[in-house]
Amino acid sequence: MTRSSADSGSASNPVAKLSLTTKLAYGAGDLGPAMTANILAFFLLFFFTNVAGLNPALAGSILLIGKVWDAINDPIVGVLSDRTQSRWGRRYPWMIFGAVPFGLLFIVQWLVPSTNAWVLFAYYVLVSILFNVAYTAVNLPYTALTPELTQDYNERTSLNSFRFAFSLGGSIVSLILAQIIFSQLAGNPVGQYVALASICAVLSIASLFWCVWGTWSRSYAATGRDQGEQAADNTPFAEQLRIAFRNRPFLYVIGIYLCSWLGVQVTAAIIPYFVVNWMGQPAAVFTQVALAVQGTALIMLFVWDAISHRVGKKAVYFMGMVLWIAAQAGLFFLQPDQIGLMYGLAVVAGLGVSTAYLIPWSMMPDVIDLDELQTGKRREGVFYGFMVLLQKIGLAIGLFLVGQALEISGFQESVAGQPIPIQPDSALLAIRISIGPLPTICLVLGLILAYFYPITRTVHAEILLKLAERHQQQEG
Image 1 (cartoon, rainbow, N blue to C red):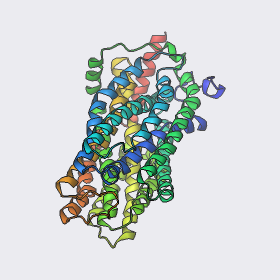
Image 2 (image 1 turned 30 degrees about the vertical axis):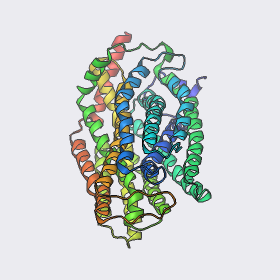
Image 3 (image 1 turned 135 degrees about the horizontal axis):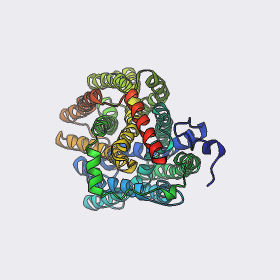
């Protein structure tokens, strides 16, 4: 790897504007994780109940068990990436060596190696644990690159808009691929999912390598020294956790993110059932609804980014959440013959979903700057470890809650080769509650937390000024 002259010039100015090629390469790093996470969110519970033949409670428990390991796995990987020293820096070795296992493990999640429910349960729990380790190994160090690439308040929002443009773009591509592959392999449900996973795995691996190749020179230049020579933070792990959780803005950010992501994941998990069982539409229609949500969110990323430059991150989050809450309420009251309104509400929801992707991740680098001011250390891995952990917990809890709600309400799982069963009224009501009131509660809690978030543009500018004065004193 070599440093480009453009990026090397940033060494003396850590808030210099990022080049378009750097932003594109950084954004590409979230393409693969987004594609895999999107497919898991929209299809995995449906795959377990309608293809593998597991009951909803057992299916919803699989991901929850896998995330128990993540409660240990993510913060540990975060600390280890902070302490990693190599000629590629702290983050890049994890991405380089984790990319291929990440892709391969994603594929084997979609095999059905047995017809015995408990054998399948054990198999999917094991694969889930291994996949989550690989996901963390590539995605957590990637997310921790943001504050290493720029210290500028608005530039970080811009950088994250590129990241989530690729994220949402990857999600959209995964859904389009699903429609194409499912139509070409109709009648072979296991083959459909394996083919989809294989293509996404190849794209995931390639995009991770693009990110490493395209951002390393800027990260090198921004540090002003060989990353392999950066001093490791040897503070004990337990003490690092205590320091992180004494950072009040950090607690607000992770609360905002968890509430937002729970809203996303509960909605994503229940949409297939809502479209098929309540609206009475073919399974392919739910993919179109998901495309309407994510396509709108993708377009709005850059609109919200521009608005945030004028009014700030908190105001943008409030605007988006109000629109999203209105859409979720509308879905609860939607009737089976209101197909056009369903798509309209999906577009409105996409306006809010966009801010759930953009704003919490744009707040996190500011929190890390405050931590450096308070402690004299930069520990991106610890903070981002908890952000990635919460993303996965949101997915797991969403799937678990939906699975339990369907089981309790008497939902009838499909049997291979048999028509889709008619669901009892109790199951239909559970589906409607899961797509309306349940995510709405999460979003309202996120709004309350955002109201009290203390780091504004002015506060962050003061933090950077104090950090710059400290660095000058240390150099002097």
